[in-house]
Image 1 (cartoon, one colour):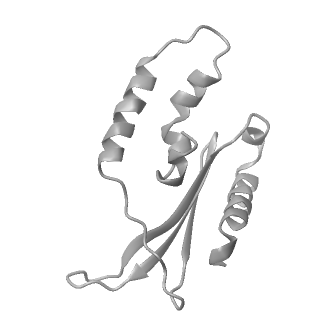
Image 2 (cartoon, rainbow, N blue to C red):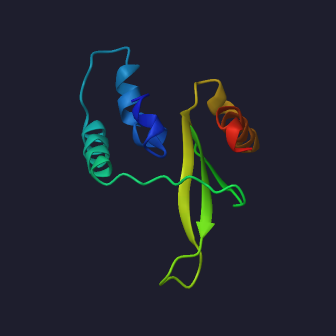
Image 3 (cartoon, rainbow, N blue to C red):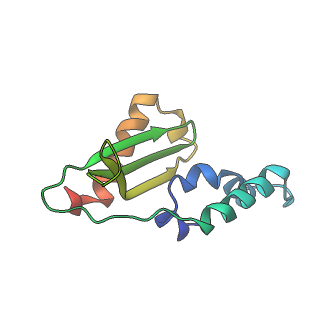
Length: 127
């Protein structure tokens, strides 16, 4: 799962049922929730998003999303494309992190700031 997180956007949210299974203190039991998450993961792997390398003069846009258990960021660029009235957004990079128990108690604004901190540390070369 850790290796796939480099290639799948919001893997922390999509893989939460798997992480719960791995941390289970009781007997391992494959649930319906885990089965559904596994099927969705297989469908996503069949059509992965294509990442784009930004040009030096392009503006990077950052999207930040938080849930109670996961923080995610995505960097995108906008480019003109034939056949489209507006610019089309292309994925450059994304990061998703499952929060540990203490970080889940952060207020929402601190989760947003934490997502920016993680992104700025991991993607320093883009800034």
